[in-house]
Image 1 (cartoon, rainbow, N blue to C red):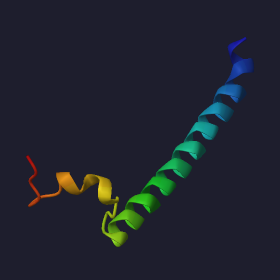
Image 2 (tube, rainbow, N blue to C red):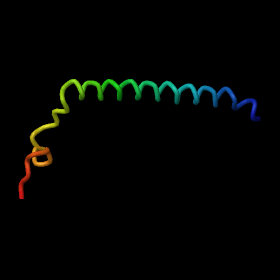
Image 3 (cartoon, helix red, strand yellow):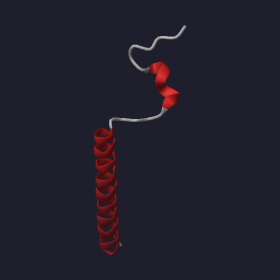
Image 4 (cartoon, helix red, strand yellow):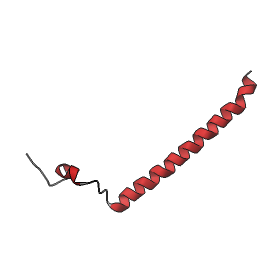
Length: 55
């Protein structure tokens, strides 16, 4: 019984590895793009920036 499930487990393991690599590549690209663009988020977070204190 266990021998019949080994190919299925191997397939799921490889699928998991491929999905992990795809997500890691996309995440790395997104972080690199954010660093290159200077983390421009928008005007909504201006109050949280250093040097701008509002009561």
